[in-house]
Amino acid sequence: MNIDNLKKAEILAEALPHMQKYRSKIIVVKYGGNAMINEELKKAVMHDLVYLSTIGIKIVLVHGGGPEINKTLEKMNIESKFKDGLRVTDGETVNVVQMVLAGKVNKDLVCQIGNLGGHAIGLSGMDGGMLKCKPLDEVHGYVGEITELNMEAVTEILDNNWIPVISTIGFDENGSCYNINADTAAAEIAGALKAEALISMTDIVGLCSDKDDPETLIHKVYISDTPALIARGIISGGMIPKIDAMTKALRQGCKKAFIIDGRVPHSILMEMLTDEGMGTMFTIN
Picture 1 (cartoon, rainbow, N blue to C red):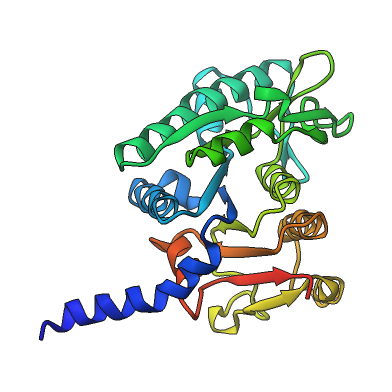
Picture 2: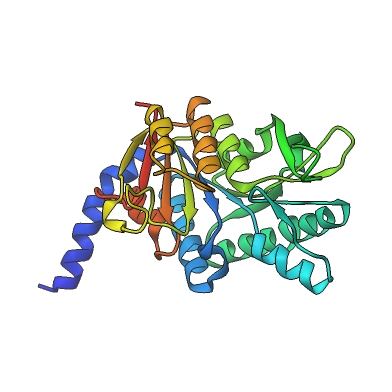
């Protein structure tokens, strides 16, 4: 007996109930971090998405593109400025954001999915009136706070078994373009679609009781416990707005939310199709 083949068969057998659980359900994946700039990891992510779509899971891919935006701004001699973890986006910068996210990054991802045998369509939050915005505040310029969502185009694409690939730019009532935080946009979309799960790819293993020790990974968190975790410093810094966004998605009807380590190849499959999972799951109950 071929031991390697036996192990593969056992892995597939273990995955079956998870496939059945998620079949025909909507999974929103927020794609960013190291998995977006490392070509090997990027290919593994796109492979996972095509695999899940092929077995009947409805995938929505939401992406940012900070490193690519920074690179383009640098080439144009435009300084990148950040405040409170968000890009300060003036009129010149937002034009670059629109060009890079809705153009280069979005279409590259659509092409990669297609090359792996998947079917994807690229969208931005400006398409189909998807993400209507107002300015977040006076400091960040054209950074948008979502005021209204229209998921009609997304649901139609999903109903035809294609993967919508969404770049996180929105619009206001005057037709101006806005840069939207990818975690915020993904959470709002997951809530609006009543998704089965929101998966956020990050550069950490998940939420740990000791941030320097991955062995202290917390596998499950109830959102009612997050204020105490913030008070203890377990949730801190840039993780707070990420958890706030996930909490909003759960309260709007998304069933579960996960933080997983995007630095690990095929981390999406490991989270969704194995008994152990690999990250931190957030849930209401």
